[in-house]
Length: 102
Image (cartoon, rainbow, N blue to C red):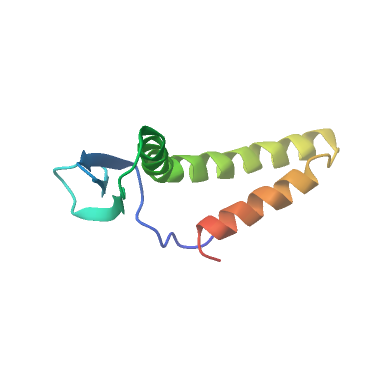
């Protein structure tokens, strides 16, 4: 297991006009973790901006869930003796490595 190099979640976003400030845990306790700018435009581009911010905020939870899923799938394969998810596990491990900057 590697040391966590990213700022641990959960993250919270606060929208300020054309900027979304992303914080660790809650708005009052931590300085900005990231700033996501919206360059303006139509409702569709605003919706994309909001979706990007939501994805960023969900990333720590998704990473933890994927790691848990791998553990569960590996335990299932070990119990049943059927390595039927090895391709999925490789893809999941690659996604985790990307998220962890490896």
